[in-house]
Image (spheres, rainbow, N blue to C red):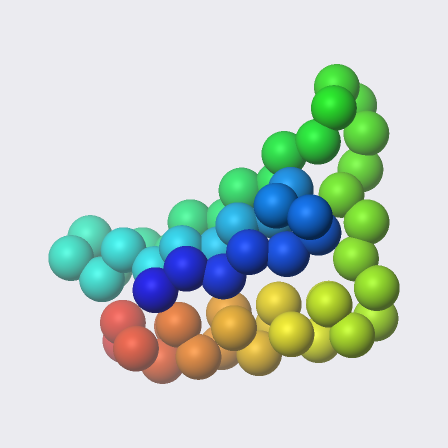
Amino acid sequence: MTYTDADGDLTLELDASAGLLRLKAVATFDDPVDLTPDAARELARQLLQMAEEIG
């Protein structure tokens, strides 16, 4: 399962076989990845859902 937001700059990936969640935030050098309040809520929802799946 994978979730992507912020025009592809943010990726959340579930690696169930390793029991891990991987969060990548990639932008140009030293720039932040900006999330709207709605995007932040969705990221939180996805994190909780994936965490429940692995444990």
